[in-house]
Amino acid sequence: AALGAGGPAMADGEDSDDGVTARRRNRVNAKWKKMLQKGVRHYIDTNADTFYRRVRKGIPAEFRWQVWKASLRYEDRYVPNVYHELRGQYSRWTALINIDTPRTFPENEDFGPEKQKALSSILNAYSKLNEDIGYCQ
Image (tube, one colour):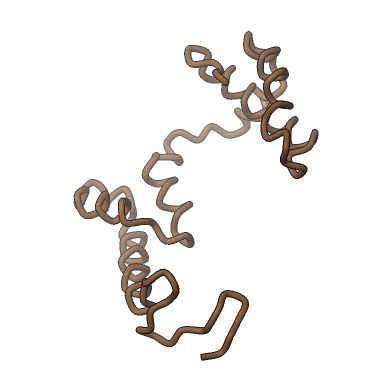
């Protein structure tokens, strides 16, 4: 087998380093693909036990975003522009958020002032959207 960036290339049916066979991955992916074609919400409503068992076993990365959006009924809850409206508004939690954010991942160089500001905006918008929950460090 050829050696690539991720180790030796595996033929169909050969075990990978983590013991999961390519054939098994293909079967699992086919099941998730079929479920997505039927519609995740429909599948949950008609085959809840199977859906939750598959989720516990792991959702393949390429389907994860679609599955979680459908599971959480994202389309039903999405409100256009609400984040952009709320992120600049102050809540009773804004001062605390501004104190805590710079202390988040202080050892991580990649989490500098720009990302800290983005996190503050997200936390502030959420605390304004859900004032009964607010913010907790």
